[in-house]
Length: 273
Image (cartoon, helix red, strand yellow):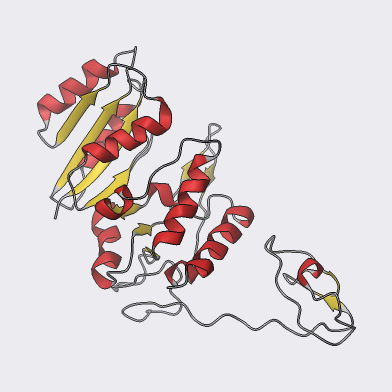
C-alpha cells in the first residue's frame, strides 16, 4: 500500500535533508517522498538531486517559477501516487512508526478522510509544546458536529488539531479544492471537516490496532471508538451559567432557575441567563 509523503520546499537547503531522511526511515516499507522545489535560489536543487540519486523512492520536481506557498502545496499533492498522502514541512521530523500507526484507523473505519496524530513542537528557544487532543466529535457522521468541534479546538487549544499535517486518503482530499485566500489553511481545514469524519491515533499505552479516534477513553479502549452522546446542558441555577456554559447563548427569556444554559462557542465564561 503506497503512502506518499509530500514536501513542498523553497530555499530549504539548510534543513531539508533531515526531514527527507526521517520520511524514508518509516517502518512501513511502501513509501514515496515527493519533493516540489518552488524555484529555490539556494542549494536546494543540488541537494534534492543528490538525495534522489541515492534513493529511488524520492521523486523530485523543480518548478521553473515561484508558485507561491499554496500553489506548491497543491503541486506536491498533484504529483503524488499513493493511496494515502501526507504533507510534510521541510523542517519537520516523523517518528519511524508514524505511517504504520496512522494507517490503522483507516483500516478500521472506511468513512475517514484523514487521521490526525499527536505532535511535538520545538520553539526557537528550545522549549517544547506537546498539545494532546482527545476529543471524539470529529468522528461524527454529522458535518455540523465536526465543524463545531474543529472550531472549538482551534479557538481554545493551541495546535490541538493540525489536520493539514495528518495522513489523508489522497484521491478524496485531492477532490477538495484548496482556496487561495487569506487564512486559507483554516478555510481548507473547514472544508475537510465538512467532507467526511476524521480519526486519530491512540496513545501508545493502548495496544489496539483499530482505534479510530483520538478521543478513546478507558484502558484499553474498544476495538473501534465512536463518539458518545452530547452532554445535556444543565439548568440555569440561581440565574447563572457556570463553567463552560456562557450567558451569551442562554435564552433571553430564561429566569433564574429555569431554562437551559447552552455552551458558547468560545468555550468559557459565566454570566446571567
